[in-house]
Each structure stands twice: as structure tokens, then as C-alpha cells.
Image (cartoon, rainbow, N blue to C red):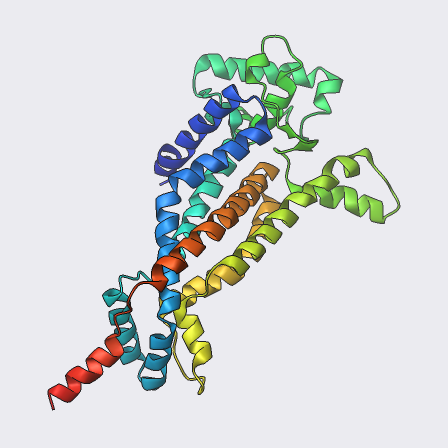
Length: 336
């Protein structure tokens, strides 16, 4: 399964990011352009989702009537709701699909950032030449105090597999200081932030500050906290802009409070509430580059949603709702 994910998601993303980085040798700008490329690829699906959710909003009165009518019959309610959806060309699960697709992209981007030499520079660490070059780099760093201070503890004694799996960012960073290794160098800096670092690395310097110590690392790592803050805030704003599914509106409109919302619509609502929290937590524990992607993706989605939502609301305002509730009621009276 891991090999399939790498082949289908990680490697293509690596090639896209590498191509952009070669054209625009700025890592942060590269990730911003990469985000725009991904949004463009997902645009048809995103537009379909927004159109479906706008249609769901228009069905709110019919949904409220159904929930009031079948308040004590959950199976019948779900059947009638799905019939209403089908008659009006609405896919109740389409709202959460674009969000779910973000997860493999996030995990794939994490792999590309974590292993830039493998996926951006396409160095195969299973080849003998690259194994020898890696071990040579490790030996040089071990014997150079100034370089040894730039790599994580354990780098000097790490096995070849550990070097390839966990220390590619460190290898890339020190490569720029050693003749013959410049081709492994990637500059992760963007506006003073090292996008290869994790925002949760700020815990160490913050705890030292609380104990009365002020270290240089604090001023280097503290700005990284802006990344999860921006990711969470932009996700919250996007959630506020996202149309509420009709089933949720109908449940609120039910005076008796006994209506049962469609399961897919409930999933949409839960995802919308959880997304800001998930955004902040995920981007706090992942490289800052992932958080930058997430933030830019949210901002682009908000801009897109602002304009397309107006268009779809105008479009749906001129459309006719197929009311299966009244249709079925008339059909039953006719057969009596």
C-alpha cells in the first residue's frame, strides 16, 4: 500500500515541486505555486461540490417538511430524503469529498518535504554511488564541529537507512557548505522562516524562556507558530463561508426538534466543525511547508467560493425544485 501511495501521489508531487523550484528558486513561492496547481487540478470537483451544496440549501423547506412528517420513522425519512436528492440531482456526500482529498495531498507533501533529496532531486539511496556519497557526507560532518552543530543529535552514528529515511533535510542543509555536494542543496527559507522545521520545535525554547533563559533558538523558531495559527484561522473563515447543508437547516427548522438529519449531511457538518481544529493540530506537528500549503489552499478556496457561490445562487434561484414530498402525497391520494 505504501508503494502504491508513493507511486501515485508522492512521486508526481515531487516532480511538480521540483519543476516549479527550478523555474522559481524560492521554496516558499514554489509551495504557493504548487498550491495553485493543485487547486486548478481539483477545480472541477470543487465546483461540483459547491453547486451540490447550493442545491441542498434550496431544498431546506422540503427537508423540514420531511423531517416533521417522518419524525418517528428514521428509515422512511432517509428513503424520502434520498429520493428528494436524486430527483433534484444532488449528491449529499459531495460536500465533504474535496476535504477528504486534501488528506492524501497533505501526507504526500509531508513526504516530499521530509525527503527532498529523494523526491525533489530524485536521488536513489539504494544505488552504490549514492550510498558511498551519503556515508562520505556523514564522515565529513562528524569531523567538522561547525557542521556537526547544524545536524540533529545522532546524525553522526546513524545507519545508512536512518540517514535516508530521517535526515535528508539535514543532509541537504549541510551540503551547501561542502565541495562536491552542492547538487544536494535545497534552500528551505521563506521570509525568514525555515519551512522544513516543525512549529512544535518551539516548545523547547519556550520552556527555556519560562525558566528564565533566553536562547537564540527562541527567535528563530517562535515565528513558526504563525503557521498553525494562520492555518487554523483560515480554516475557520472558510468554514463560516461554506453553505450549511439543507439537512442541517431542516433539523433546526423542525419545531419539535425530533428530525433526523441525513447521515451524509451530518458528516459534512462534522467535518466543517472539526476542520479548523484539525488544521491547527496537524500543521503544528508537521513541517511548516505543509502549513503554508494548507493556509494558501484555504485562502484560494475562500476567493473561489466567494465568486462561484454568487453565481450558483443566481443559477439555482432560476431553477425549479422537484418537490417529491407533494408529488408522493398526490400519488397516494390518487391510488386510494
